[in-house]
Length: 303
Image (cartoon, rainbow, N blue to C red; front, top):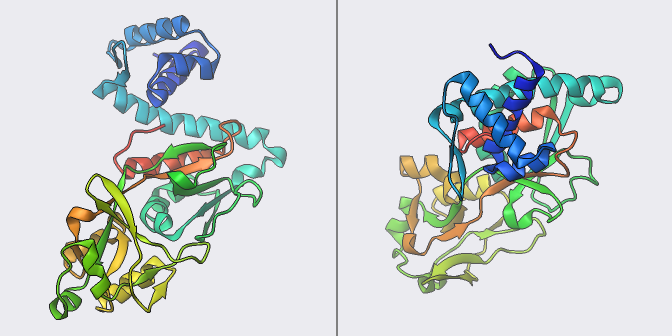
């Protein structure tokens, strides 16, 4: 029976090792020596009668049983941290609010699917999701976290990936492709109507397509410029032109056939989406839970 404080500390240590994939990094984070961490995990495995970690000279990975335990512990420690945070926060009020800033694609693909579980587990948290494309300083503007692609995350932020790498693809409706020749190379885009993509800073985005082992930016023709992904998808489905979109964002349209990928061999590799925030200290427990829900929805392990 695991009930004393030492066992609770061992469980938190185990969870931190799984998250950091390193005894040394976990030991530093928790203020213990790597030797003490190793002894604690050995003691925990003996008490449970199960092997929790596979250790080599280069890596530390959980066993299947260890992964199941880590995922269960993450939920438990979220609850514990939430209870402590609620008491320690000034006026016990800050626990009641969580503010996230994300651009539209991230809100659609990551936050929206996570909301039902989050609302069930944290019914008293006031969650605000601000959807906008402009680059912002989340600390200055009072947000607990932001969600952006890796290259948009400030270097001084803690960043946790929510997805794996993405692909950016060129797509069109069958009606458009039936009326026009199908482009075979990026050079063919000059003879097509392309839906322009406007960025958060109001500049037009040059379509990035793979050219051999490198990627090249292409300026494409087209009189319709859209800043919103949903509107771009609607316009593309209506046959108004080729569109340059995140493949994961249009998975339903690709599955139903209302949009088709062209220039598939030239699709560009995109960075994962990250959630980022100012510090691990005094982290809102709901933020960790929301992060883990989004990671699990994208087949990533808990943190």
